Each structure stands twice: as C-alpha cells, then as structure tokens.
Image (cartoon, rainbow, N blue to C red; front, top):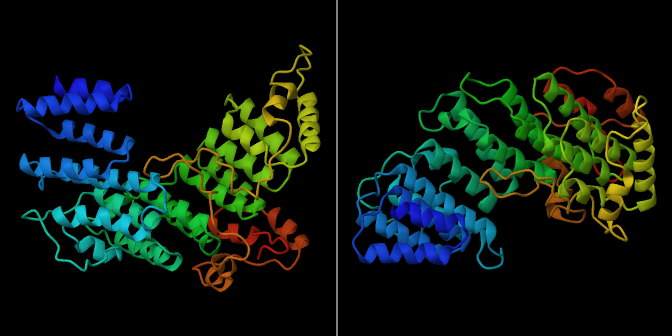
Length: 425
C-alpha cells in the first residue's frame, strides 16, 4: 500500500507529496523494501538530488538490504549516472562525477572486473566497504562502463577499454561476457566513439564484431545500433557508407524505424541536400511513420529555404495518386509553417537531435559534439589512421563515386566506400 501511494504520486510528477508520504510512513515504523528504494531513487533523479541517493543508501544498509542486493546497487549507481548527465557540467568535474559512481560500487562490490576492463580509478582515501563485497551483476558492470565512457573517457582510453571488453567477451569471462548478451553496452561504445572525429572509424570495427561475434551469446546489432552507425557516417560526411549501412540493415531483416529515418533526413540536411532529405521524409511517410519534431528540426538545417520548399513541392507532385488524383501524403503547405520565417544557421549536424537514445535512457543525439575544425581532437588524423581497419582514402571524387557503386556484402568493404570531402580529412 505504501509503495503504491508513493508510486502514484511519482507517476503524477508530484514528488513533494511522494516524499511526504514516505516520511510519514517512516515515522510510523512501516517496513521499506526494494520497491520503496527504487521509487525514492526516481524522485532523486527527477529532483537531481544526490543527497537523497546517499540517504537511500544509508537506509538500505540499516534495513539489511545492502550490500547483498546487487539490483539495488545497480539502481543507486545508475541514478548517480543519470543525475550526472543531467546537471550543468560546470558544477562538478567529469572525473568527480564518475568517482561518485565508483564510491558506491566499491563499497559493495568486487573491483576486480573494473580493473580488468581498465576503468577502475584508485582512490586517494581508504575505501570503506560495507562488510563483505559481492561480485557485480552484468547490469551493474554495464552501467559502470557507460559511466566511464561518458563521464571520464578520453579518445584512446575508450578505445582501449573497448578492446579489453571485446577480449574478455571473446574469452568468455564469467562476469564480463554476459554483458554482451544485449546491445546496450556495444551501443554505448558506438555512440561515444562515433561522436568524436579521431575515433569514429571504430564504429565499423564494433559493428563488424557484432555481426561476426566471438560467441553465439553476443547480441547482434539492433535497429538502434544500425541507426547510430549511420548517424556517425552521415555526420562525418560519408553518405555512401551511411547508405550502405542502411542497405545492410535491411538485408539483415531489420526495418528502419522513425529514429533511422530521422537520421537519414538529418544526414542529407546537414550536407544541404534538400532533395535527398525530402525524399527520405517521403519514404518515412510511406512506411506509415509520422513526421515528428525531430524530422522538422532536421529540415531546418537546410539554409536555403526556397530550395527546401521547391524540393517539397516537386516531391509532392510526384506522389500524386494517378487513380484518385489526390496526394497520398502531406502537402508542402502542411510543413511550410513549421519552418518559421527563416532557417537557423546550424553548424552541420551539431544542433540536430534525431531521437537516438543514450544507453542509460536520456534522449539525445550523437550529433551533439564539441569536435569542430580547430580543436585538437578534430586534427588528430594520425590516431584515426592507426585504428584497426582505417578507411581507405580515395584520391578523387571519381574514385569515391566508382567505389560507392560496388555492391558490398560485409563491413570490411564499407571502408572502401569512404568518400573524402575537401577539408574534411
């Protein structure tokens, strides 16, 4: 009854009432359980209240739920990660945010697997454990990997962590290998490495490893995985490779979803290809997927508004049903008002979310990046060339066009249809 009342208040976004109900129940000595703790952690996340996380941790220890309840430890660590991703990055350093997760983890769980992955950072202070430490669950290890990647990782560090992770999966590590049973962790690597110019080529290495896994227990790429890779390639101006990724995705029997289509539309719009963007939007509609705010925001990246509207009109005219004489899809007028009186000056894909989900639930786009010309990470081409399978570098656009027409059957050949734009590589 207590949990139901608190949960109802949380679902109504009335966090103050939810907390008041809990406090009243606590004063009357009512017993708390895992559901109570997880509900309170939802409140902590919504209010970005790190102190409530620590309070839940102390209460769980008093009740004897910790350190034995591995699921609760995972919830505690995940809540800290979510709060860290939501607060102003200027409030605390990236390192301190990851260390906050680490302090909870090392209090209850064996740090050995973190050391084997290369994501354990030794503390200057004495680690205080809550008695016996337990082996971490796959969910908890995955959350720690994601936290390290997004809060603490640097280019070479994250690449090294991925290779260690893949090594342990291939060798069936009893704690690390089960993580690969879902696409969750692999997608985190895809998303982070794809965001940064020096490491985006690693996306194809990861995709290949998912398609040709070392074990039958490893999850194959999902629609989310394919969409992240396509987004990475479009954002790095590799349209031929991105198109082939979408084609391979379909060959594997996976149907593009709304996120995938928004990725394609944003990719064309970022390169000012109005016709390609509008055609993709029409294909999205033909697949019975509704255009949403992400779609329209992507189209506003096309700076030439007249060109965009002309593409809409031309494409709409081609979509007239010859039997009825009516348009089967929305008319350009239906979209025109959405573009406002002018088109904002977007820098590539940087400001265009397409609905991709970060692995820990925060809706965002891998196109949000700080890697721009002039930054050290953008200029780090030697690192890119040092990757396991660097892209080939066609010497001319003619070579790119010729190679992009070749039919390819595996990820290796995606490197052969990498197209180089002047000033990009």
